[in-house]
Image (tube, rainbow over all chains, first blue to last red; front, side):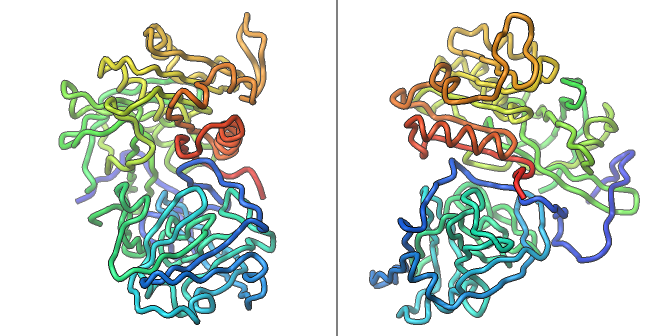
Length: 198
Length: 242
């Protein structure tokens, strides 16, 4: 049951519908739990560890050698801002996981700096996620997750782990950094799954 | 779940910031540093929501009272209402508390370094309040960056808190300093090395403010040898970059 806020009129906007409780921004705000890690591409490495412990590795040159895609997607942060039609360049997880032997249902993304976030495997495949290394035609800034970040735009943006350095595949679901700090385990913005229990 | 709080007091802090005291009948309590969501509803049902840091510490004796301090964002949608329109006696829908990382609990080990820029001082004030109400002897230091003396939020409160032997408050003025304060400028490596705990002190550092401020300060701390895992940050506003 709601109330009316005395004297509040608000600022309506037309056009694209946003997920519930979101507002539109043209800036690109930053949400990070600690200092920004500064990882140079020449020191960057990305690994996928399967549920059997097999490790697959890519260095920066190997990532650059893979077919890249231009991606235009709306993004939604749990702190309530949304940004429309953001443009990225990156490698699809379909490409990176193509030769990985796995039947795992769950994935934990790990980042330089220690951040983690959990995402179901089904949400990473079929053109739904990328390792992105360009934003708006430029190399990705460290404060936005450069040199490369996970991009899973259909979930709240904390799932798009900045400074990503690896995925650990698992048969069981574990919770990541914000997911153990009171945020929702899945994080669908259209269902407004912000906090645990939503 | 959303619940209806009642405004029981308002206090002007600066030209652009106001503290709002709320009575929340079913408030579950909170940890210093947490935030909450505020939701406004227009007569036609249109809604707008934002998150705000809680400015007060939770105490058992005032278990249903919380304070928010809101800085008006230029051309904002929700903050101008909270700073200029909302009155004592009005209802306000809130949800919370939220957040389990940028928090301080009295049982936590080690000294605490707080570094705030502008209204980034709000959750840090909650930590100082929690420190005082718990009677904690944990050493606390606050480095607070403001544009000018008139921009200081919690002026009298900080004076009172700074009178504790365990709390050190240091203001840094970036535009105009008061008489007797020769330094005008942003927090830099010298300020950090002179006024913050040292990397070997085992301190946990909390940095809150606009994104460029937090980026700069967190980078300075890491460059000075602080363990990044002991530096907790909370950023707000635009990046300032393209």
